[in-house]
Amino acid sequence: MTVHKIKSIEKYQYTGKVYNTEVEPTHPTKDDQFYINAENGLVVHNCHPRDNIALRWLAKEYEIGYDLFDTIMHAREIQAANMAKFLQQHSEANNNLPVIIHGKAYKPDVEFCIGSYSTLVGHYLEQLGVSVTYADPLADNADKVNNNIDYPAVILLAHNRNITYGYTGVDAVDGFYFKVQPGSVIVDPWRKVELDSIPNVKVVHYGNTRV
Image (cartoon, rainbow, N blue to C red; front, side, top):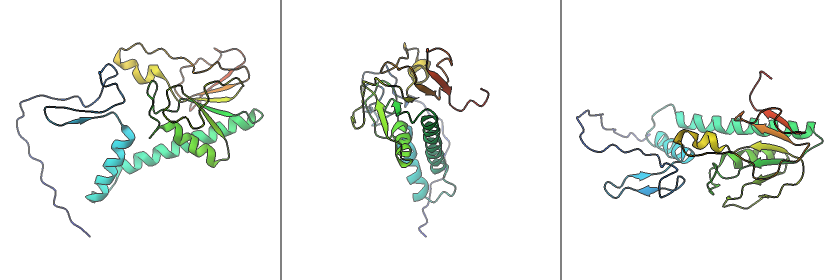
């Protein structure tokens, strides 16, 4: 076993700049990109999955014992698998409607699909033998993307602008990437679409056991 010596934590009075390491949507480099601070070399990037990957490596490298970050990622995978099963059940209960994931990028208004939760859910759907299509006009990975859905489907609302950007004060109006057809089932994990708000469309609030 390799033993690493870790320096003890020292406490001292600090005077200087304090940096917010979150890139806001109004930042000129755009919310999804990274930049390097010219003064101190600080790299700033919004990326929950990649941060956890790095922290998992550190936990293993320095043998810190319990790996909280691995547990977080494992829970994320279990949740995605459960959601895929939920979508499969609603598809089968409605004459095997096709499954559409509304949003392929890891969040609205960006193009990056690497590390996206949507593709993780899609992966588990395919393991269940369910073909999946994505709708996302900005996705940088066009595989299985169709933005012209003109048939009823089980639709997972993976994107929600208001949840993602509402706290910033930026106008975050939600809308669909395509016209939802009658006979569809909308699965809304954010629980923001009213249950009876769209004629001839069933809305399911994922995770809500009170309805």
